[in-house]
Length: 254
Ligand code: IPE
Ligand code: MG
Image (cartoon, rainbow, N blue to C red):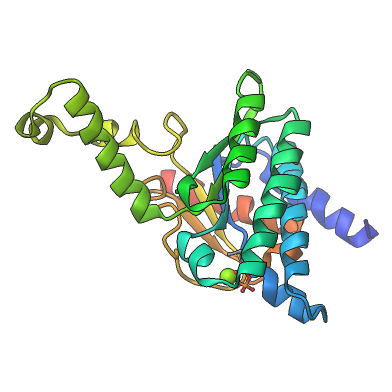
C-alpha cells in the first residue's frame, strides 16, 4: 500500500469514529466490462474475473469497518437473458468457483442468495445452495447476500405470490388475506427474510439510477453514487461512502 494512501485510509477511519454506521450495506458490482476495456483487455470477461475476485476485498473492508450485513448484486435476470452465452457461462463459472468457494472458506460470513434461481444453470444454483447450507450454522458470522438473477420488482411479486401460496395452504380466504396484509407479512416472504433493511446502497460505475436493485429493502436507504467501475473500487471509497452516510444521518437526527 502506498504511504499516502495508507495515511488517507487512517484519516478516514478516524473520521468515522463517533459517526452513525450503517448496519446493512448493499453494493452493485457494475462496470466490469468497461473497466476491462479501459485497462486494455480485449476479452471483457477478464473484467468479470477481476470483479468477482474483488468481492473478497470488499468483504474484508466491510468486516474491518464493523459492517456485518452486506448485499452484493452480481446480475439481473435481463443480464442473463440478453448477454452472449460465452459471457454468461463464464460469469456462472465464476459464481460457482470464486464467489461460492470464497464464502465457504471465509468463516466471517453466512451466505444467502436472492434472485430467480431457476434462471441459473443447475450447477450454479446447486453450488450456491450448497454454500448456503455449508455456512448456515456460523452463528457469529455476518450476513452476505449474493443477489443473482435478481430484480427488485420481481422479488416483490415473488413475495406476494408466496404470501398467497402460504395463505392458501393455511386455508385463509383471499378476502381475509387482503384484509390482513401488512408490510411485515410481505417482508417475511422476501428472498432472504429476517435481514435488516439496507441503510446504504452503493451504486458503482457512474450510473445515477437504481436499475431495479433492492426496492422494498432500500426505501429508507441513503444512496451513494460512485464514478469508479467496480473492480477499481477501493477501501477509501467505501470509507468515504460510510463517512457521507454517517454525516447525513447525524444531520438528520439533529
Ligand atoms: C456487471 O458488469 C456484472 C454483470 C454481469 C451484469 P457489467 O458486465 O455490466 O459491465 P459493464 O457495466 O458493461 O461495464
Ligand atoms: Mg453493467
